[in-house]
Image 1 (tube, helix red, strand yellow):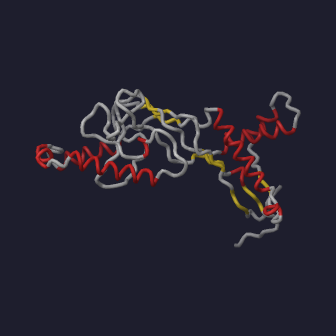
Image 2 (cartoon, rainbow, N blue to C red):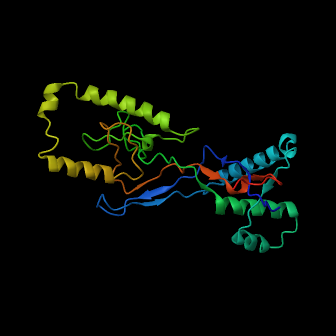
Image 3 (tube, rainbow, N blue to C red):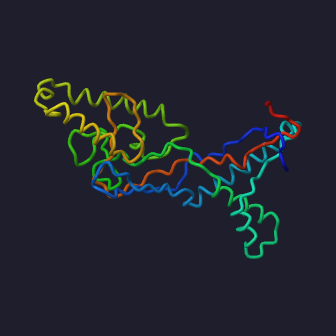
Length: 255
C-alpha cells in the first residue's frame, strides 16, 4: 500500500551472531595504502536464514492486535532488480514461494552494515595460526607493540562492543604498567630519537590499522599487524531497515 503521509515506525532486523567471515588483504608494504576489505556479507547460509527469521518476526509483530488497532501495515519496497529476479524465477507458481524469494532479494539488496567489525587481530595462544596477539595483547612476533581495540575479540558479541572495549583497555593499561614498572628498564628504552621521529612513528601506527582505531585512551595506540597477508574478521552484523517500515494511514506529517 502507498503511505501518503510518509509517517511510520521502523524495525531494525539484526542478526547478532553472523557466521560469515570477511577478508582483509594487505596489498602494499606502504602502511598509508588502504587494505582491500571484503566483509562478504551473507556468505554463510545461516546468515540468510537468520535475517529471514528476523523479518518474519517483525511481520508477526505488525499483525498483533496492538499494531492492527493503529492500522499498521508492512511496507515492502519495490526494487527493480528484485522484480526482475523474481519474474525470471524459473516458473515459480506458488505465491508464497515467490514472496519468500522477493523477501530474500530485498535482504541482499537493502541490508546495511550493523557496524562493529572485529576479529582482524584476534587474541589467541602463540602457535595458533589465526592469532595475531597473545593473551598479553602483544603482537606475536614483534616487540613493544600491542593491539587494544575490538579487533582482538575472537568472536562476535551480542550488542555494541563499546563496554567490552573499555574493559579490554583497562586490562591493557594494567598490563602496560606491569611491564614498565621497572623504572630502570623504562629509562634504558629509547622510544624515539627526536620529536619528529616520534611524530612519524605515531603517524605510521595510526594509519596502519586495518579497521578504524578505537580511541579509548591517549596512552594506548591500537595498531594492526602489517606482516600478515590476510586476516579473516567476523563480518559485522547486518541491519535490514527498509523492509520493516510500518506505515500508519491517515497520519499527516508536520510541516
